[in-house]
Length: 69
Image: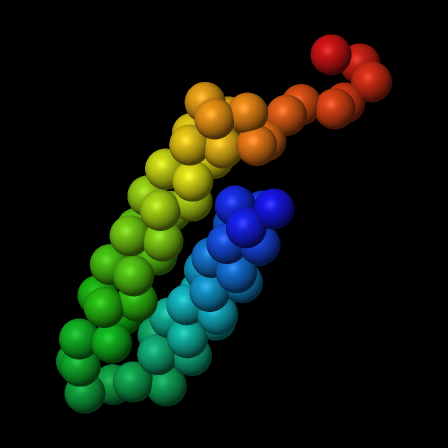
C-alpha cells in the first residue's frame, strides 16, 4: 500500500513543480536558475516514479486489474 501512496505523492510533487516552472517562465526576467532547477526536480521525480512502479510490479504489490487485459 505504501508504494501506491508514494507514487501519488510523487505525481502531486511533479504537478507542483510543473506549475512552479510555468510561473518562473512567465514572471522571471532576471535569468535565475529556477527553471533549470524545476526541470531537474521533475526528471528526478519521474525517475523515482519509474523505480517505484518497477519495484511494485516486480514485488507483486502493483498488479494490472484492467478488465480488457
